Amino acid sequence: MSTLSQQRAKQYSSIKYTLSIIGTVYTFIILCLFLFLRASGTTVAWCRNIMPLYILVIFIGFYILDFPLNFYHSYTLEHRFSLSNQKLGPWFLDQLKAGILSYIIGMILVWAFYFILGHNPNNWWLVLSIFWIFFSLVLAKLTPTLIIPLFFKYKKLEDEVLRARILKLAEKMGLKILDCFEIDFSKKTSKANAAFVGWGRSRRVILADTLKDKYTHDEIEVILAHEFAHYKLKHLVKLIFINAAVTVVLFYLIYKTSSAALGLFGLGSLSDLASLPLVFIYFLLFGFVTGPLEAAISRKMETNADLLALKVTGSKEAFISMMNKLGDQNLADRKPHPIIKFFFFDHPPIGERIELAVKF
Image (cartoon, rainbow, N blue to C red):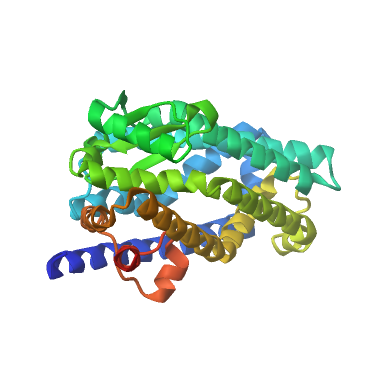
């Protein structure tokens, strides 16, 4: 990677880190003001305590307030660094689709929150945690068949040689997959990605065309060996248990401390729809505290997946060349400051992953 490219990657990453921090603080301030100014209660009254309408008003209001940051982060910045190929119209369409999807999911979760809270006042936190975990698993199941096609066009991988190689690799690692697909990433971004998604019979390999067309078969194989390694090492099962534990702790924390927090904002009860922004504040603050711990666990799992991929494929050179290409293509920060790594990286930096392969 040239010095100029490294400078561009550092600049791009630095702006992203800054925007992430600003976005978190900005959201926290908006939520606090919404409660302190009694705007939440006023909105509930205006909506006649109709939950779907209240959630819709909240979604639209926050989107408007967050629009400048959102637009700069997801559109202007990506075009400034030549990472986006998307025109303004399609970008807005994606925003609309994502907004509708978020509203539907949010409505289900909020309804479940208040329904369970009303029917189980003493152990709602546990019942809600179970529902939350189950719902997340359902979403994971539906993602490859319902959600991804909303934003990208699927088609079966046309490169039969590569497809056969991927299926052989999956068989070698003891995995059964539905098939291999490619998606039209290039219509939106010049970044590259690959994934192994779904549960049970819906498990499938997804390759971005920006990766399929620019990487060798050896490089693609080692990428997918890494993705398969997560299943082989049962990382997803472990993450489910970790996320379940985090969910239970969060809702128990709300259960034990919400009375004091409600008094701080002049709210009467957690079952009052006007208190919903307070729940969002809990999510925001709890995520800030637990996020680095979850990221550290994730980085360890990613390292283990890299090691297994290197062992299974024996393609050390392909792994290194793939990482260098991926770093250049995605403008990755190869050697971030330890504090930045602690808060923002759920994968080891590319520089560390290359060093790992060199020593393998």
